[in-house]
Structures are given as C-alpha cells and as structure tokens.
Amino acid sequence: MRLDKFVCKSTELTKTEAIAHIHSGAVRVNDIVTTQEATQVHENNQVTLNGRRLKARDFRYILIHKPAGTICSNIDELYPSIFNYLDVDKVSELHIVGRLDVDTTGLVLMTDDGRWSFNITRPAKGCCKVYRVHLAKEISIEVVSKFKSGVNLQGEQQPTLPALLEIITPKEVLLTITEGRFHQVKRMFAAVGNRVRSLHREQIGDIRLDVDVGQWRYLCHEEIQSFSK
Ligand code: URA
Image (cartoon, rainbow, N blue to C red; front, top):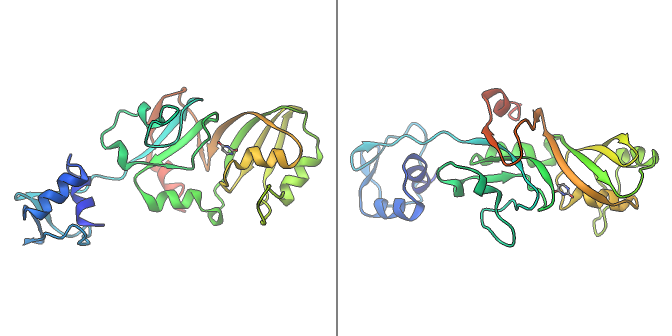
C-alpha cells in the first residue's frame, strides 16, 4: 500500500494532512526518513510518525439496509447518500460493493478492502444476489426458462448469465443473479415485456439482510471469509 494511504489508515489524518507530514520529514519507514508519499510499504515495515509507531487499521466490512430514496454514492446529490446513515469515522474511505438504484431497497455491503469487493462483484466468481421483485404484470411460467438460458438486454450484445426465477405469487418473484449490470433486474423484466414495481435485495452470497431499514452492522468473521473461498 502507498505510504500516504498507510498513514491515513493508521491515524485520524486526512490524505492531505498525511502527505504534508510525509513531506515535512516526520515519517520514517524502517528508521529512514521517507518524503515520497507514493512509496510502497508492507505490513512488516516499521512506519513511524514523529517517533510513534503506526499500525494500519483493519479493513472494515459493513452491511446496511438501504432505505428507498437514498443513493449509493459518497456525495449527496438529488437524494441523500446512504453513507449518511453510518456513524463511523473516515466514511469516505468506504466504497459500495454493488450499487442499488435510488428506488431499490435492501442489502448493501460496504468496505475499504478492494480485493474483497472484487470477489463479490466480478461475475466470474459467481456470487449470487437475491432480489425480491414486485411486478406490474402477472409473470408467465415461460420466463423461468428464459431467464435460465439468458435474455438479451436492450443495447447489449451478450445475453445475461443463467438466472434463477422463483414465482411466489403471479406478481411477486425472487430472482437470483450472479452479475451486476446497469439496472440489470429492471432490464431483464423489460426484456420479457414486464415492468418492475418495486425491488428489494435480500441476500448477497450467504449474507442475509437482518437489520431494520436505515440500520447497519459490521460483518462477522465467517461472513467476511465466506467471500474469500
Ligand atoms: N437491478 C436493478 O435494476 N436495480 C437495482 O437497484 C439492482 C439491480
């Protein structure tokens, strides 16, 4: 990891402040003053700031129940950001693992561990995301096999990967997909002449949503490990 990132992760300093300290000569790596913020440091390097040994904070893994009318972005735009619901420091270091649309509710994961999130979002990893969908029109049973073999989304060449459709009632279904294309669920139902009325993500991999709307919690060790297999 870059030295400026390491200093940020192990202190309360912002990136700008960390760089200023590095430039001032206050930071040593293995007892050598290091003024280049891009220097790569590893876990076993000894990094000090004004003589104090720094230890990088552990990565954070968070589950949150996204309310409708919030956006999966670090900045409030037309709608409030989902990050406003978190009371943790350095929120800007966290990123969303698979965004939801403004009107979609449900399970969102956040982390500052880029390698971990890649295991969830990369289609080749086959991580399942389960959505509960309320539809405008009654669903026909043929859609189950269409989604299983893949449908063509408007404007795209590649059909969708096999998806599992479970019919709960004629207008309520569960859809399990392993990709995360732009507006994928809404576009899949549009591709079969239907329309999504409401969309809620219930599960990602083995992790199920178990907190109330707007609430969040840290993932436990087993949940974090479940994506590293
Ligand atoms: N698919 C969609 O269309 N919207 C979402 O928010 C998530 C998946």
